Length: 63
Image 1 (cartoon, one colour):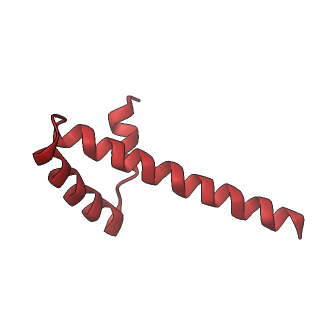
Image 2 (image 1 turned 135 degrees about the vertical axis):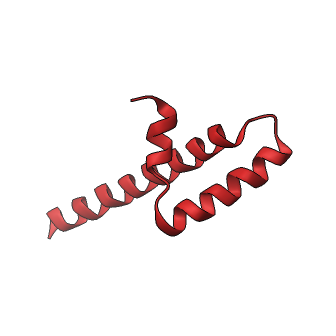
C-alpha cells in the first residue's frame, strides 16, 4: 500500500468532503497537486483519530 492510498483512506464522510475542499483550495495556492494534498490531509486525519482512540483506550484501561 502506498502513502497516497493510505492518506486517502482517512477521508471518509464529512471529513472526506471537507478534506477534498481544503486540498482543492491548497492546490490552487501551492505547487503540490490536489491528489497529494488530499493524501496529506487524509493521513493527518487518520493519524489524529488513531491517536485519540489510543488515548481513550488508555484512559479506559486505568479505570
